[in-house]
Image (tube, rainbow, N blue to C red; front, side, top):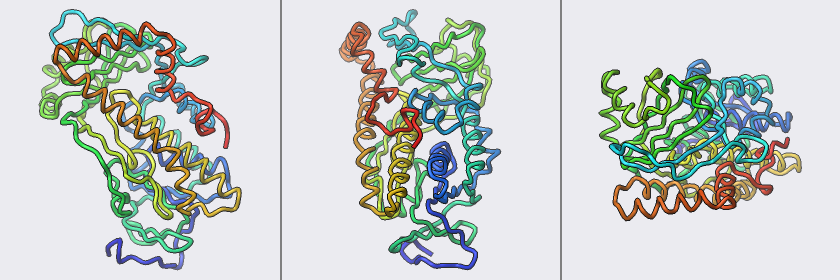
Length: 417
């Protein structure tokens, strides 16, 4: 059965809900929890075939900006996550070639760059997803251990067909099923974007000396090499290389991989060794041409995928959650139709400018810094030095990265809906 052929059907025993979320990652779970926490009269279901234990075993880590941390605190999960997190107290940016004996620091961000709190924390993905899942279950979210295969929209409802058979009737379907969203394609929503010809190698390392909460971003000709602090003498790496080189590096034996890693990591923290699995992820830019359709909304990576150069991909997803949850909850309290496209376009307008702006910023930064031409290097290093010497400009820069602002969604300010 194709999407075009499918028609809404009421089946005996079919699940009925107000909001059906396809995707049980950090975006889907936090949206489900935000909706149920704000309004327990909203029935919410999450459909995902990935077992909870598998999702909770994700060894990667992500940078959570200050605003996202406040949202997680408002949802009641930060206390559980905090014990496994590491605050980023300092950030330094260098620009050099791989063989350069010295890596001069052009830009620094110190402790409390966001007044009263670190501007970001490093959080293990598995810990965060596990905490969100447990809290969502306690809040009464229903979990469907299957993917959504197809859906059809009718006046007043959307009917989704589960991969294993059976249907779910809802008033709103949210696609939080990742960058290769099948539901986005079924909804007929096209994307704009391109590949960077780069891949990001992600792994965890141990080092002799403590990092002191310091994150480093070394701009190398192939792309940024980010060292991000984890609890203990460990750091998470996001290592950008041209795709062919990334595949070659990941396939190396452990000894040779460690040598290549040491050339980029440096010796500031003493001897270093990889301790976690290593994987390479292709990097590109993808932005959906529309974020909503009748009874349908995109959230997280299904709506946008950006370069990790500024560590904002996950945080963009949390901003989507905060905006969509606030839009839906306020509409439901007013007795409005939560799946009406005119209502959903409020969410789209709220998120589109921020998303496109961040996509263009990260695209421009990657093109500027993944470049070894001497005139370009001079211009960008002068620019970094200028930002470092202007406190007001630096505060504006870090505030934007942390999504500071009084006009954003309430959850990002730490306020309940």
